[in-house]
Image 1 (tube, rainbow, N blue to C red):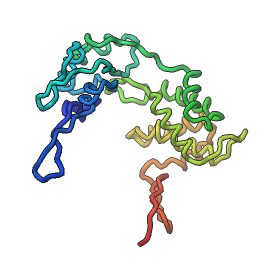
Image 2 (image 1 turned 90 degrees about the horizontal axis):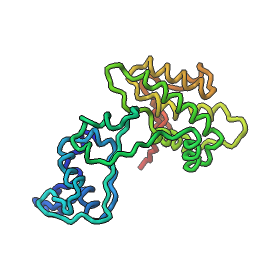
Image 3 (image 1 turned 90 degrees about the vertical axis):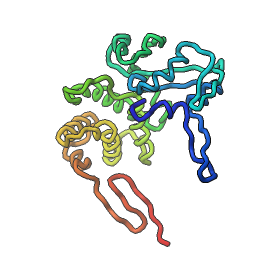
Image 4 (image 1 turned 180 degrees about the vertical axis):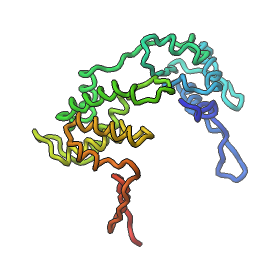
Length: 261
């Protein structure tokens, strides 16, 4: 959830039909879920707009009917469930959510602590078995970055979340899709460089400061055993390099294939 997702996005709105000048009602995901009895998970509910909170209020109060955007009252299916999440580094989630949303007292709170190292290894190897030889080292890097991320965030920004499991899986997805082999006892220099690039893209590229990005790159390189001189040449601090080939254009590490007609 963020400021770009409003009540119309969840409930639905009128959209253009195939006939010019005509509109039809398109139910939103929340309306469809209420009617069909699906489960809905709203991520980062503390960032939801105020009109979203007013839409959720009848559901949280246990009403058996739900008003759609064009005045129709639909029955709430018995199997419908509503979940939400809030990311916080605080142990007391009640005080963290209190004051952020007027609906905080209506939610049943369940505190889910971050996964430990063993849990993370089991999760990522279940998704990407080919990366099992490097799983532990990547997770050690991830946990170190999580601990150091509070120092990276500017002091005028309230720090509520570290890097999440989603970020870690995104990193693993990029590494797994590189086509490199990770089964050897000793990884090649190119394989180490590939891993470094993906880790840097996920965990360092967000920083607007080139100096801070470079410091993060150096720290990541030390964790992964990549020489600093090579790490600094691999990561572009200004803009990606544009290269044109016979059948493709490469921008940074993204390759766009082209055909001639």
